[in-house]
Amino acid sequence: MKKITVLLAEDHLIVREGFRGLLKGERDIEIIGEAETGRQAVQLAKRLRPAVVVMDIAMPQLNGLEATRQILEALPATKVIMLSAHSDDAYVEQATAAGATGYLIKQASSHALCEAIREVQKGNTFFSPSIGKHLKHQYEKSPQRGGLSKRRNAGLSSREVEVLQLIAEGKANKETASELGISTKTVEKHRQHLMQKLNIHDTAGLTRYAVSAGIIESSVQLTIV
Image 1 (cartoon, rainbow, N blue to C red):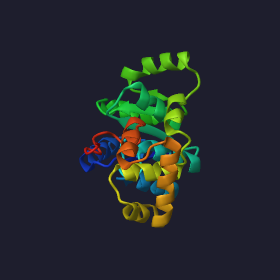
Image 2: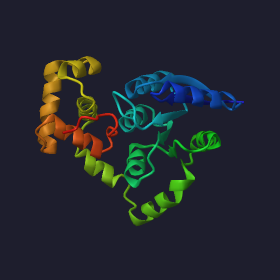
Image 3: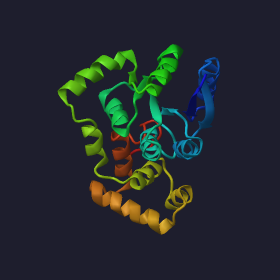
Image 4: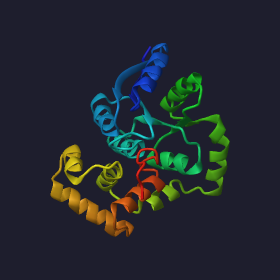
């Protein structure tokens, strides 16, 4: 039996251990890697080429949405299941716009995760039952996928989204430069471009935008003024 290879991307160790214990009991599923940041998830996915990535939407350094975009750009055959504590339209729409074919709220049963992995591997979509019907209704009303997400991202490049997330997480330019492997001067240029594109002129404003656009969750940054 050929197993479905899975990469787990979840920043909380105790949650990751729970997923690992659950999936190890499935004869047709094999965990081939684990990531605790979005950037690590992208790197591991490119190296390990998993069939399915189980991705937390709120990952540090690089959020799950942008990590998903980068993974699918490099590995279009890989399937991504997004995990989130949120079931509202904005998060679901942004996940599907990023390319995720599965979306599970974290309160879902363990059986649902296994079923989701099998279904997306077959080329199907899988959504938590609590949001599936509503999502279908929204798609029927607005067939253009990802409209909200694209407007919110305001034409930002992947690198600009990465820089924006690190700014919103409170990283200084030097820390951001080290994290991304670029110069401090390049970070400063990205910051300037972000402010110009978004018509925002201070760090607090960039942080508020990152929260409203789903780039980070509000719980990540508690000192927005």
